[in-house]
Amino acid sequence: MAIVAVSITPLGVGTSVSSFVAAAERVLLQKPHLKRQLSPMFTVLEGDLDEIMEAIREMQEAVFAAGAQRVSTVIKIDDRRDKEVTMEGKIKAVEEKL
Image 1: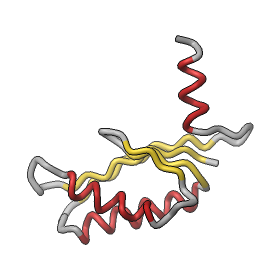
Image 2: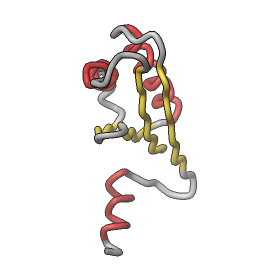
Image 3: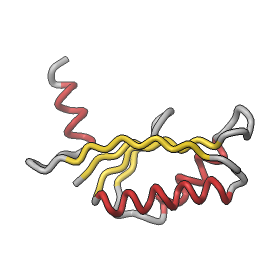
Image 4: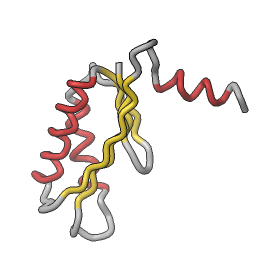
């Protein structure tokens, strides 16, 4: 299972991008098998890496469909194979050390 942070940013559309973020997030609402966590700067996804990458491509297309002519996408992947990890587990591990 992978944990992936993604930020999809439309360029040249002004200062407010919340409608574009909403368009991308609507894609994820159709994928209940992927766990998601929206944050102010990224959306974090948890699930099968192939499914996540497919969802990111669909999210990017949704931003184009919402009117963007240019999109910048940043992806950070944590694909751990030695043990199962979750978003909550990663946060808990840090919080326990505080």
